[in-house]
Length: 322
Image: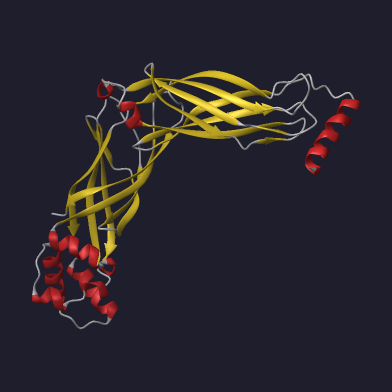
């Protein structure tokens, strides 16, 4: 009740002072762009600029958006504002809206033949107004926006998984560092048996996880886009796990193209100290579940976007270790 009385008193004082309540707030979309990509969706950013001429604060109520792709409505959404604009000031807020590719695939029959899609976004900005005689309860600002977006239907797989065993000198150095008296050839045999999927007496008796033996793992990440769009990127950071156990992570620039498939070559080192039960089970069975997270920056034609768009992904599946 006190707040209502204070607000009413503020309006009365401003009116006596000759405040011009005939002026109205203005709102505009000052920036509309692609914010980021994943292999499942695309996120747009809307920068909304609101100018408040009043001697009291106002707020952004909502941003309503209707998405049309190739002339067909994909979905509608309403984002609550939360932006507060102080008296006689201007403020800018950024709102994110995500469009899922699966929703687009369902309405575009020739999606796989497309490289880019025409997107039409109808927006409505709603700003509530103070209770002033002769003024509406809210103002609405409508905008029509156009954007070309890439058609994405990804497929990720792993190929050519290999593990390079340590050299004799590396085994000898690891045994010395650990103060172990085990025979060098016994360690080599146990490691070869494990990587080959064999269980021997030597394998069972040798605790490889107690030794800091360097193993070089290499594999190819095949990222295919099953549409006409080309996803071009110069480097990729990755975080690779097998059966839920982290194995290697890093960054590679070894990327080649084969048609609409990007082949990312990964080579990294890990220690036998990280050989927990999950990794041991995968090596023994010769197959496992992988999870691959990472990111890159995708380049598009300049008429789509002048700077690269961030792309993050988390994918998984089954693969063969040999």
